[in-house]
Image (cartoon, rainbow, N blue to C red; front, side, top):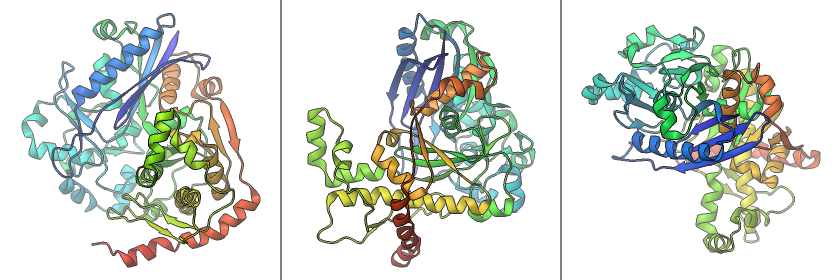
Length: 500
């Protein structure tokens, strides 16, 4: 007997089969490409992605025949909604969050009273959300819009294609801008105002709810048991929090990938005025009675990739030929103590509180004697200073964090995690399984499928901590002094490169 967790991301899907004791039985991954038909457009070929997901499921189920899947759950990126027919056919591509279409709808939503709209939706209108893109489709592809039975995020799309009802959870529904956060229903006020028919949207349910069973056709095609429970998942950040055991106020997920995001958990929504001032959103957690916000950096771990490709291409080639990880080689060059470099890690558009689409980075303090190891460490320090500033921002809204759980590719680096603990002044706990989104989906499958009485029971059984990184008092004091300088970098870069 096993649980299947499915994680559908922007460029890859990951499948994990898990025993009820927490052992990973099989995993598979497939990658796919973002399509850019025109400048500013960003899509996925939903047929192609579904084919890749099917291939990955087949690979996993072939390896767990002795432990048949009893329940499965899907979590996914937000915003990207695919048109489907009533007979479970994909009708077109999905538009990704960073697709720029829908500006007119965003402007119309932004014209609403911000306090009233934030109270209702938990968001300020911006280009990342999926709902305005549906309005663009309504206006520019009316035949497709009319033909579509529903528009589904990837979590409910995969569930629907496997045989479930078209139902999404509250966290993914929030990524449309059309959800009434507190009432946990589609907002008739917003839908009427923007002109979006509610019958084009999926039903709503709490993540972890059974929404159907695997159909005989899907079972035959994919090696799944017919009748296996299909459980609705959540937005990937929320699922990752479940997979890392982030369940209570004061805890936060720290996802370290190409995109870095802190996801704090809380049970009481902070005052609206504070949240608007900090420009943080409010979203349902995957667990009932709890909420999350997102503080992120789109440059994130891509800074290391930039360094590798720009300043260490020969070392990258040599490491690849030797079958080694080039990042292990490069990070081994870092000095033991803090550097004197100041790095503003805004090499890509920023998240809250600036939302700067024309962001520029900065590396200050270079000398002729600066080593490559110091430069690498300076980049990692700069990214972490950004998130320390985020802790102050969230504290101003009333969101406190006393413990982090770290996941993603960057969580494999002991050196980077120690830098983060020292700068943030908080312990960072690394789970044994750092692919937390798929694990979180498997946990929700176990709860919805009745194998566990609660998420807390499932997390106690399936989430184990590998190591806790505690801040070093001496280094933390040195970083306190340097962080006071970091806060002056963003105003300085704006003076050099004013926004248009």
